[in-house]
Length: 230
Ligand code: GAR
Image 1: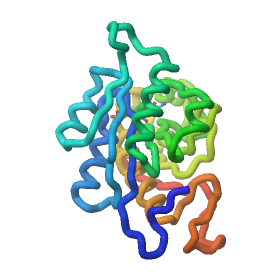
Image 2: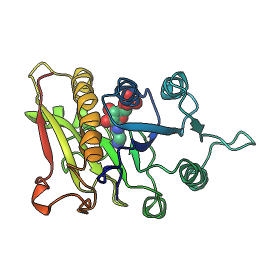
Image 3: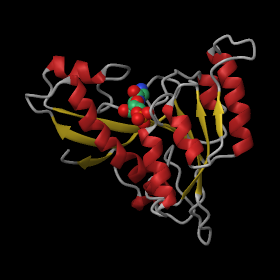
Image 4: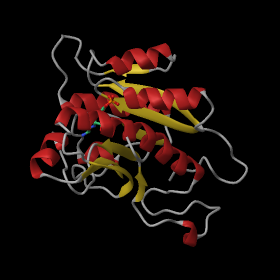
């Protein structure tokens, strides 16, 4: 349970972020943290790719980074080796929350179940529709009218945990997969900090657990939805 919001305890939420790519969502969290707009401390970033620009973003913000891409001999790390190192690193950082922000490896049930903190994932689709990859191409091909992004609790089944929040937009007839991705990423940059703020404040809880200072009637029906124009 996330407990940084217990009465009288105003410590920032300790957040670890797992990344694989550009890290634009990580940057939004860094900016919000530095501006004092989000009561979090990013205690560390783990990248499974040595070429992820997210590493530069974290280093520029003097956030500890663990790059877990290759073993000492130069061989690419298998998922089991990655998970062993990532578990040890997370245990050292002691996060309250682990955020998968563009993390592109599938984690094992064992890793998820034994993680030192609850884990949430940002997914570029309106779950439960379009789990997995290439969501933009698939919604365009299907002729859908809406697309968006979701933040869900990570469970052993891929993209299937409880959906906490979603942001959605209307698809224009001129949209291509590329510009739809750009539009949805703008939504992500609002949805991720908003969701973490709700978790940090105890408005949202994970796994249906109540924080000590909340009445059960406070809990909203999930997912919370943001309708945005982008
Ligand atoms: C985001 O659009 C996120 O939704 C997606 O990766 C991108 C990372 O962008 N995640 C997934 O597809 C997970 N299945 P970023 O590195 O610029 O934050």
